Length: 212
Image (cartoon, rainbow, N blue to C red; front, side, top):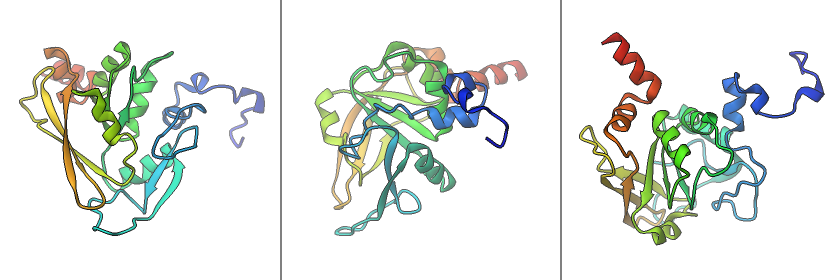
């Protein structure tokens, strides 16, 4: 309002697609989206742990968490240099997907998206924004991790020798101190996509090629 925008002009995020601050806030603002870590809710909400995501939760401890917007939680995690991931189901990214669906994911500090399957264009856009797409080798493993609100995750096997469609391991550490591994397939499908990802996305890749 302080910028003299009329109430009638607050109509859609798409009409502000040139404003990165608005569009990042709108990335997960769909009112029908469901986060299984917050059962019974709809919309872009998640659990934020304390002032930042715990690197380790002591056995038997009851870590402090609160429900907040995905944008606000992501800002806290980024301020504490805590990378985040997304766990998704079938056809993740399906719908009227645009470039901002992947741009916003990157700007929220998400480093990887692990799903049962991807919508084709969104998978490609994630790679183009420097976000690692992965699929569960066994789709049933999704049920093991889909609502683990108090766990931490590590992707093991991702290094400079990354190969298209190689296997990696999602290592899950639960609050009670136990851990288990889940096999995933890296959905970087071609050698040029590997170059995009290793450069941090298409734009950094093009820039390095121009300056080379």
